[in-house]
Image (cartoon, rainbow, N blue to C red):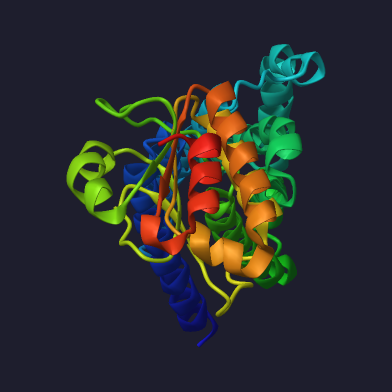
Length: 351
């Protein structure tokens, strides 16, 4: 009965890993970040390892643990490269010790067990665990960028690596087996949640998309009809940052809906939350120099903040896009403004 329950839980973790991998593949196609693609592959191979656990084929299971460990480490390296971060000298100092650490680990395991197959499988788990642990340590360099959104991923990878290293020693201990299985299961769910939280974070904006062609740099103000016919076809496949209320966004865009309803939702922004819009724009343009920022509801923002506050907000957006060689597109109807307001809008964002 116990083993049947364990197999059911393993099957649940298999489904969770595959589902998370599918979501992260979606993130890859949306952002073009290779780290997302490799992380999705890592979760697939991790799920295959679980399948071999269920089928009780340990030799194939350990091979896929090793593949997963390699992919986790590759993900960390790609993330550091995408965010232009270098490992610290202290962290790189661990790498020359790797042969010594793994040799001592293998010798210790050999003294611990006289079963050749157990030693071979255990060594595979130990080496894989060490590199998974390294993957977590490498990601510590990203804390300043991703902050709390990175902590679960870092912690879960590091602990999974350590747990895999203790696996050969503690699994034969009968009383520890259910404890070890529980720890492993909790760490899997923590890892999956941590990965999804990480790739859904606002900081995960390192764009790999085609720059818009035929669209002027700098600010512009345009009506809805002209936007739909002359501008939208040129930026539909660009991963623009869009603050929308009236027009439909492209699947390629990072869309935030400006609304009072459910303003606390992570993809909704209240019309008075201008600082968050500016912060999102700053992060987006920092990651994608030459990007496109779209705002289609200036009259709605003026209603809640006042016209003077809107002008200051648009002036800041204009300056941010100019500094990053980007494009600011303000979509609005001329009839929504009086003569004085329209002239001021044209002065700030062009006409």
